[in-house]
Image (cartoon, rainbow, N blue to C red; front, top):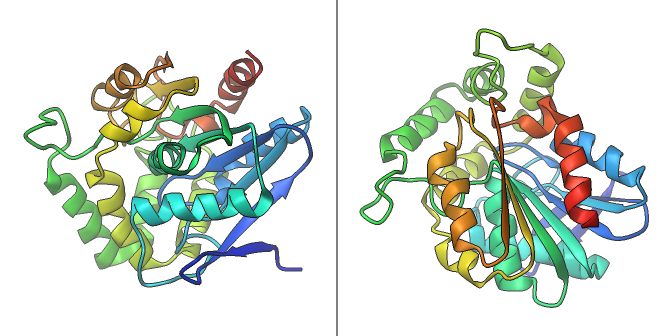
Length: 276
């Protein structure tokens, strides 16, 4: 058995893990990773009596390395295909970074009657790129730099992200874990370069404002104030105001990848929110 797959309407094979029984928790991973990025959370929650589900986004991890559909509409529809295939109800959806955008879009567009709660961790909404309507955003040149780095030398570019800003390992007092760097690299290089390239536009230029406004389930917005990938001022602080039923939790000094580097803190807060 090589794992479990669901085929989407446009013929893409989406890989997923489905462990345990109980209330379902669905995890949406960040760019350019895979479901494996949630190991610390999935092991914690499966041992607490929950059913945990995580999928590899199209073009990422073990899912089909297709040429097209690397946008939030397809990402959300792919997540919906997994949810419907497993007939998940009363589910908690947890999204990190790009996965926070995917989870937001999924809940707004496909989640009616199936979703209990939503959690956004270091998530990209409302919109990352600087526009007239979003003057606090990052200039397009930042994302063009991502594209240039990916095309020029994807392997080195990914090593640089993992060993630097993603986990805050570039900070003077950081406890650097080579294993965490290697695991980020392993997940990322398993995915397709084109999916990752196109995904940069999806995570940086999608405007989730209308999605956030229609979501009415309780939502926990978690963000590190030292997030060097998704700066907090233009993401969590804005999203939490647009959501109808949001709780904002800011983590002093925590990095973008805090669900890995500070799993004990994040898992305890997730459990408290899910049980509340």
